[in-house]
Image (cartoon, rainbow, N blue to C red; front, top):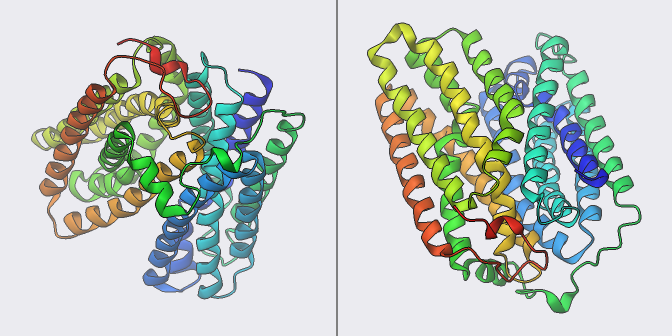
Length: 417
């Protein structure tokens, strides 16, 4: 990686330190520590998702019209301000406002940061750059969670001051790194005349959805996100605790294994799949999801193996993540309408955020009613649908070629399966 890529990856990791420290504890902090109740705590998570849904497409469109680094820096500073609001929040209303703005800031920065990776990467190393960015974010969240586990004390209203301060400091440091990295960047920003759908958000969405490949990329993204990412933080742990009856420590071990597999295998997987078409890798992801949910379905036959199977499944899911993360951004940008790479990435980020918000609700309904089998069957069907949709995407893309659209050539799409 070149120096700018290293800085972008580092900035992403640093920004996730604080979120990794806040995410595991914010529900219990709001509901129990501050005594605001489960409704406020659940509403806080919902408002975060609402903010993210709004911010992702808006941030993407702004990144197409303004220097992406400016959009990313401002968004990260907004997130830092939101973390400070959470730190000083003395009532539920202020806390809810802070969570809403935090969702806005974190997510608005993502499309712009992805555009920076595209701008500062060569055609041959774009997958590698996105892979490092994903790995850096995973490590940042893991380190943040580790730090929080040693410093957060939920029995005291001030017990999360350190976590909120770490979040604010991480976002500020990330913004500073991006600003420094962009110094001397002479690459042009798309002019207004180059934009497609400049008349409004609706026309931008229509411009993106007119591209058949992007429609299928969106479908695959929804299904793959529903099949795992939407359940990673709540649904799967709840299934493990309430149905498989594994110890709480096992859930933590599984999350750690997931992170370690990503860190250990990401670059090896990128090198091993360098000549594989992105759509082929998405087919593999669908197959891996199907395999994992199948294993979780069969573990009921051997209850003694539940803990080992659950941990191992999280590790196998991580292998699928190392395939998915490096290809989605470059593939989406490669097929974006001219001058709309940021808009396209923002819309897909909004789709992923929306799906991630729906996932826990689906899990809560099924598991809350005692229907663990339904939970598994639904995700087996979703994973099978992701596999079929990825196969369809591969047919839509057809013979490898260099697509017109982004203004930045994406070498990955010309590799053969």
